[in-house]
Length: 59
Image (cartoon, rainbow, N blue to C red):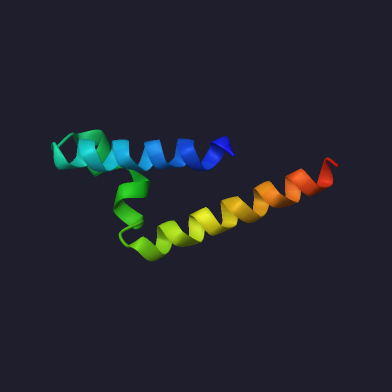
């Protein structure tokens, strides 16, 4: 389950850079539109379900 780890690093990087005022992070679609914990919870839930489905399909 590498994808959730990569997503977490990506999200943290965007928020740290946005807090520092870096323009690319402030205008990033993730930063602009995913402004609550609920959006992240939906993304992680969808990622988890996809990983389970892919895992089941390869057995």
